Image 1 (cartoon, protein in one colour):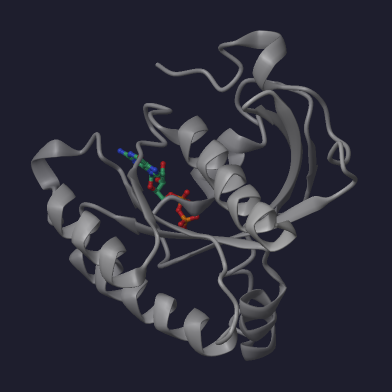
Image 2: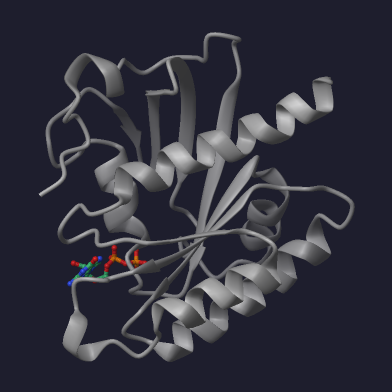
Length: 192
Ligand code: GDP
């Protein structure tokens, strides 16, 4: 079982702002039941009792990535209500997106493509970091989407891909570190 805080002092710092003062807004998207809340709660340390500020469905935490602190606010609000306004707002406000499907649910995988298209429409000219996540990788017997299908989809989406298991805490840490790296890559290339 992977623990978020496994490398103790290195991975968990505190709630607060980034060393350069920025706070990155990360939005979780995906069908109902794919594991968004489970992933967000692991990130927020809700389960391992780590210090994190949880306000409703947002999780605020700083993590150490490649020797540098980064502050993320993870929003698990996509399904909060059915309002079009909120969903439109979600598509506009994020610095980065995690599009989640369940590897045991083909429909959720198809829905992920729709979300990618919606996002592209909302943020046409921007190069936003996106990670496609196939969650529930522990449910081997009920798998409906292969790793190769997920990976191929990410190529079409022009985004990163990772399979996770919130149940086993597998790859969850890598997912959020990956998001930070994607944000930094784009930031650095803008500054150059
Ligand atoms: P959300 O609707 O996308 O926020 O999904 P939830 O986080 O509420 O999860 C829906 C259900 O799937 C819950 O019963 C979770 O316990 C379960 N679940 C979430 N992630 C995993 C996983 O990685 N493996 C397994 N086996 N179950 C999971």
